[in-house]
Image (cartoon, rainbow, N blue to C red; front, side, top):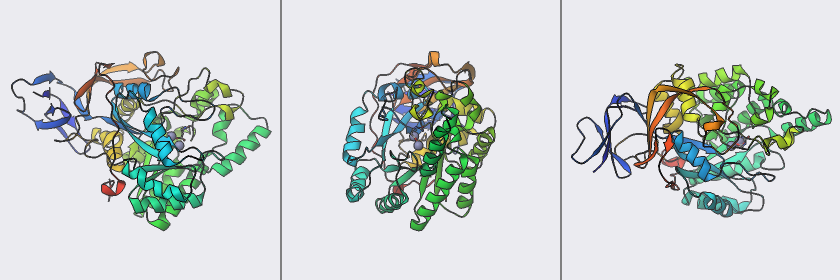
Length: 460
Ligand code: URP
Ligand code: ZN
Ligand code: ZN
């Protein structure tokens, strides 16, 4: 006996077809008409879209930033994720100074309790030595096939150009993929010191000390270093027109640069720093409306491949407000995992910027391909995991912190309209969400990911 979703429209990155979808156990077993068998549970989804579950390839659940810890752990973060149509997240583990990668991986894995969606782990490398090169292979063997280097956060997470070169070189040997936080941390550090010396310590100075040109500089630098080695890279949370321009130039020359942006860089802008600006202190910071526009164009033209959230939540009261008089004390980051799917559907698809197929590509298929999850995840195909979203397009509500599941006391998108109702969300065939209520129990699993070299290509 299976479950048949009957009467909907199936949307993948390449197709839109009127078809039923049959789930047998954890996987999709049939797609088409006339697939109902005696004894099947038939669910009428007429008028609804059937989409692959969302993949948010950039979250920070249970992140310890030294003086405080994110308000969302894996349980609350993944519950919010699944309610909002995301069935897989990839969380960033941090190697703290003096730690081995094994310790960092085990620490992260032990924190991933009671997950409501599936999860993978990226390995942040902050403390390079010769042993780390060996350990990178161990991480790949454990299915953590991607790494992150921070070009910002001086004296903390930041690595220098020599480390960038070494990690890229090693990653190429073992088939991994390195993701980059691209901001010039040295210059930002100098700008922060100048601002503070001049008494400029309010939240908006977080943004003013991280100008767009420093994102462009870091992107150009890492592209050049990767160019020496002829190795692909992945740029996380792209926020600027300037950065996109450099990427576009090198992509047009045939370079493999995978690019992610986030809803906050598409929908929010720097004017928000004027009122309760602490809520929007994140790195990179919010930019201008012209940057929002440029990033939408980058998505439409497929120079930007994925939309993740960089979900990194801290409460306004008691965490963010620690730094209301000194922006250096505001923990960086903002929530988004619960709203990404609906926001991009509303402001991308319904505002006719993205086709439905492009939408699926950016929020599910491309991250699945790039990060070694495809075709198990990221599409609707026979044999793929039955990670499915049934979205009723005829529905409208407003985003509010009062009704959210993510464990944080504000929402950066408060009051914005969102369209589309999550009638059902299935995780490996299990009904996790019904009419926007989480009805399933925590059954999320760690996903052992393939290497980038085993299929990361999304363009030629
Ligand atoms: O402000 C942010 N984005 N915090 C999370 C860490 C990072 O840089 O991705
Ligand atoms: Zn980052
Ligand atoms: Zn991040």
